Length: 371
Image (cartoon, rainbow, N blue to C red; front, side):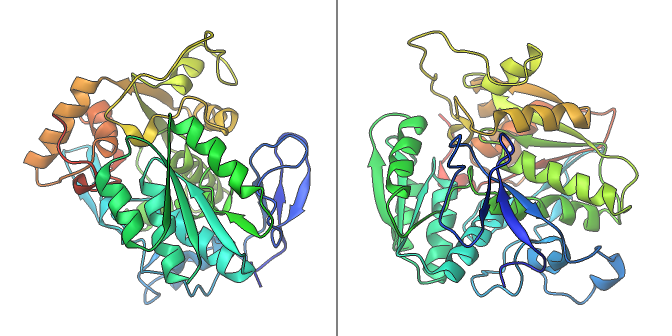
């Protein structure tokens, strides 16, 4: 079985459904990303957690897959204080050195059960690396599309896992288009961290771990870097589920952080818009050190904006200079984190009025120290 209870893909825009055993990677009507109509196997009982497997699979009641064969022991990363009010979750200690393992294991495990002829993914680096690693674990042939200019260390890691690497001229949007064209070929499983909602149900375990490590509570705010919004949307799923189960009394504010150079969601949020604003003709994305969140047109924009508003949160942006400073500051504290992964520390590291957790979501070895 693919899940403990009946599960289907559901388009949030027009209500179209598809069976999760199909290889239909997007809504056939509007071509938008799927949500997952998923009923958990039962409430999560905190008393049942001690003694369970020390990975994200310990939360099996609330996951759409169970009994995985593809696992690399992902999850259960440390939570450490940085200041009196700011703590960091060390997701750069995952098997492939980024938080993307949380979702990639779900996609690879689903693909293993569906036995496609090939797996295709696109990424600015970390998601592609994670998918490549978990496909290697599942013995699945995998092709990863990345934009030119992707960190050499990330492309080296993708190749090391045995995946075929396709370097696409142009930006992240061009890379996504190339991968989606390939994904339309028969027999192809599109391991998209953006379009496939199983990925979001993997990233939600980040918040379940926070809840467990903090003794059955959550901080006042959860800050996350946002490009395609997969960690933020996973966090929104988890806080809603924990509230519905009566395991928390209130939901924390979601603080979404973008690089000032590429901040379409922040612009829409502060303009009061429900979706992305129309960009002037000929507009191109500015370069940024935070390559992992340099997404000019995230497909789940409406859901991201709604999730931040519903939580009482906000969007913050950080300059390139603040990213450089934050990376060196964290390194001086003992944490060598890639430039995308320091964005939240750059944004909220000085907060003293409420408790907040930031993810250190990618190892510094993936990009090196910013010049």
